[in-house]
Image (cartoon, rainbow, N blue to C red; front, top):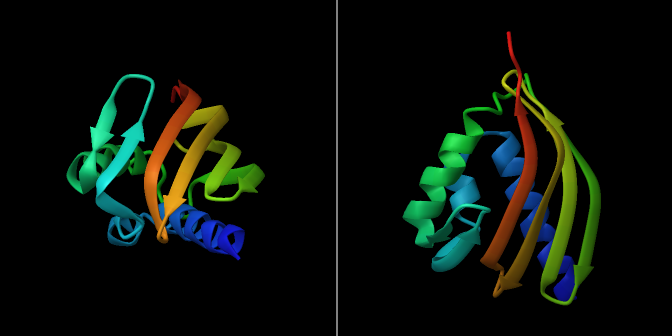
Length: 119
C-alpha cells in the first residue's frame, strides 16, 4: 500500500513538471523538504521552487519529450531514470531519488547529463 502511494506522488510530480504547473509540482513538497543537486542543497519550498522553475523554462509544453526509463520503489524510497530532449537541452541520462513521507517529497536528489542544444 505504501509503495502505491509513493508511485502516485512520483507520477503526480512528473506530470505536473511536464505541464509546467509549478503550483502542482510544489504541492508535493513541504517546508522541510530538501532537494540535493550536484552543486547545492535546497531547503524548503521557496528554494526548491526557484530551482525547478528555472529548470522548467527548458521544458516548454508541447515541445519537450521526457522519457521515464525506469521507476523502482522500495517502501518509501523511489528511484527514477529518465532522459529528455527539449528545444534547449539534450539530457541523455538523468536520475532522481526520492524519499516520500506522509504523501510528500521529504528528500530528493537530482543528477543529469545535460548538454545545451546549439541553434
